Amino acid sequence: MNIAIIGTGNVGGALATKWAEKGHRIYLGVRDLSQFKGQGLLTHQHISAHPIAEAVAKADVILLSTPAPAAIEVAKGLGDTTGKVIIDAMNIVMGRGPAGYDNTASAILDHTSTRDVVKCFNTTGFNNMVQPQYGEMALDLFTAGDSVRGKEIAIQLAKDAGFATCYDIGGNDKFELMEKFAWFWINLAMFQGQGRDIGVKILKR
Image 1 (cartoon, rainbow, N blue to C red):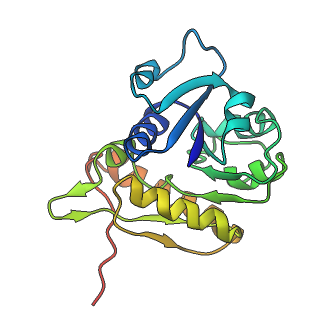
Image 2 (cartoon, helix red, strand yellow):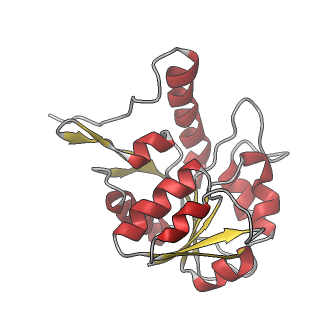
């Protein structure tokens, strides 16, 4: 796949590396080509940096992993997203998010042309994207959104990043639930002292 990543920090950088290693073509969308977080990613042959609108134009799939308060501004700056899938990996944390919204994916939908917006890669830490394997088991992920196509792509990309299963938890009405689940992980890892090396695995019998 041709994937644009907007937000080249810890999450965007980890997923860019994982997906490039699987043969996907990664276009980092950045404001300043001469200086941006994650410049070391350019050593991989399948990763290149471009102005944001140019990266989006080259891609079929767009990952947004910028700070949540910038969600509306970022969505407006993507250019024409018609026919493209947007995967939202952002979370509103401690009330810091786009004004007037309880989740970032809804804000993105209201400020971009594509209807294929899904939530994924927001419910765990970047360290678990770097290494989702815990002993003999890999962690699970979750995705939500009305876009069937978007969720199919998110599920495939989760597997390509090394996660075991990516569960479909419902439509756009579950965007806020996804962020609450993320806050649960953040609370346990950061505020309750469990540390980042914890993750979620669904067990069945």
